[in-house]
Image (cartoon, rainbow, N blue to C red; front, side, top):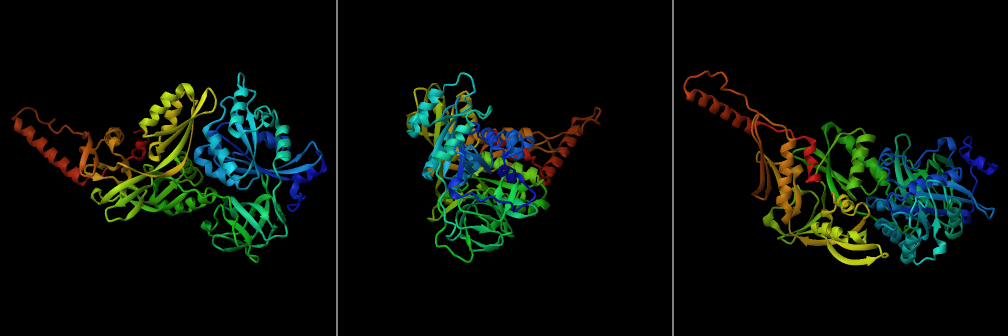
Length: 616
């Protein structure tokens, strides 16, 4: 290891900094479909550049969240800085951002792309181009990023590399000689990728003498230091003790610390144009820091913010309620901290007759919701009950008023509604040709409308299908994988609102509607859903001393019913002979008592009851 590399790891002086000229900086991200090997390839990058000592190296080292390692997926984008000695004798500063691949976390990818000039488009040699590959590619092209295609996992036996090369050529129109080959598992092709990064991706542009312009592309909360903001410097220089302001709200802060993002944050004196790093602004109000905002020097105002950052709105809504009502404030503070780390979360106070006070939360998809729920439970030690996920509906009332409804309990009475519109998405399904019939069948069952069919090659087809979003949020992806034997891939983006025949299904327990179990569904599916829910509720709710009646109703019309028989004591056991009227009197007395208990009794509904719709 040479002297320059030794200085890079020297922790004795927190201000030890070797400044790199802007033409030697490269900012790039890795984009791909889920499970195409992004994190494994990033591990090899860090090993090759010795950015991490060997004794600290482990698999998926950038996936530092427990959930990421458990599920084997990237949830958060992870920036890290490396130094690379090129074959031309020059040293380069490389800022890598490893991005998620699941469709629910496309927002993370868009934020990373806004901070980069280039992207490695990673494609699995055994699977070829998948739906999320296309989505991320188009996102990168919209931001004018230089694309370097890399075929990964070439070590797998019997892979058809030529087929994947032809797919890439048809898709991008790139010369096959520009396609790189790699194996993240065995470290094949790493030096070729680095050479392509320094030679093909342009250096960032920026003027150190211009007014400060810096993009917030991510943030996190530290229990000891408060808000930590990840930034990309476009113009100007950002130093400690500088007075900075946010363009969105013009609030002013004094910078406590600046630095770069290695495996451990390294404190420096300043950040220069083109660099990616972190700052600690000493922000006290968690909601003031917004991802995508522009930072500028408070003494030198700017007229326009930096562009290129897409605002994403949540499409899936569910209620989060603490099991213990005393945890309400803790839940509120925990959501605020998580929002710093994931600004696509939406939440607002809500209340339920069945569950008490909580929050109505918005998410990008079902996996996104599950991840946030598990993070709240693990990182903040909260016990949470969640309600049935719903999308946001547009309701036109007869008095010409338009309202958005993301909670079924807020839906107006049927007589007041003129029409209801629901959100639709445009989906891309890539599947082998032999499974087209199966895929089209489940698409039709979910009210999908086939719009266009395109062939990637002789063996693969892209189906462009329009879906109501509510039809794909539960188990559509699992069913798609099942009918295609795991080969089909799926990606979607929001399209618009369209009118549908929708009704509200209420679940009644002994005649009382449980608002947390209500849902809005298509008219033709209401009976099946209602019947399935009643069947499953019957198995979940424990028997009481009186009969429990479970009903599904649309308006005042009951469409399904189940009963849970009461626990019964043998009150006639003490009668040994005598007239039969003695037994009848005891049974009538018991019947009267059970009616009274039913009228006054309260049923405790287990948490599983609020989740049964997933399998309904």
